[in-house]
Image (cartoon, rainbow, N blue to C red; front, side):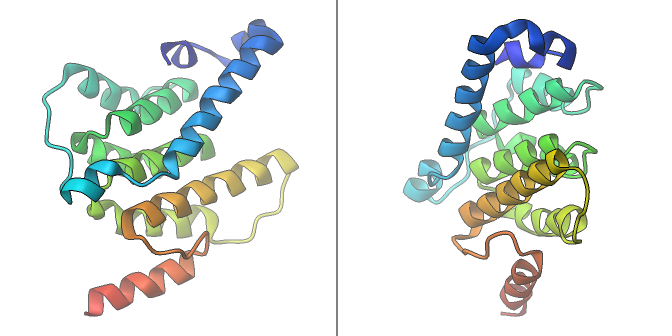
Amino acid sequence: MQLIANLSPNRFALLGLGGVLLLVLLLLSDIAASTRPNPQLAVTGELRVHLEDPQTEELIHQLQAEDEWQRIAAARELGKRRSIDAVPALIQTLDDPSDCVRSWAASALGKIGDPKAVPPLISAMERHYGAPFAGPLDHIYSRRRGVADFGIALRRLTGQRYGTDPDEWKRWFQGVKDQ
């Protein structure tokens, strides 16, 4: 996925229709994979162990890159690696200015499976997607996609199905905290 990390919007047009279709297929395969249960958690009940991996450290650093495509690629790859070391940086990325980066960070947190990500995911979902939005259609689509990824991540982490409603997630989490 280094290809995506190096693409700027201007170079995106150079891929042609075949290249764009390939990128769309890669992104769709990630979406499908993000809805599958995390076998590591299902089988062992434990999180992936800490691995001192220089590539993971570099990906964590890339979450702060100026280029949006680089941040997206880093969040996507960290989700694939399921490294618990990336959780704090991915939580910070939930407030990225880009809907797409926030979406990939939420997806990565769902794949990693650390329950500590639940409260920040709910808070970020409410901050970024809780208010009604009126704007250009492409922004509405990216916001819907983003909030859907937050809901999927929370479902993977908790097993609950409250979808994209931040208020429902807050009520559920308050009930869990009160127990």
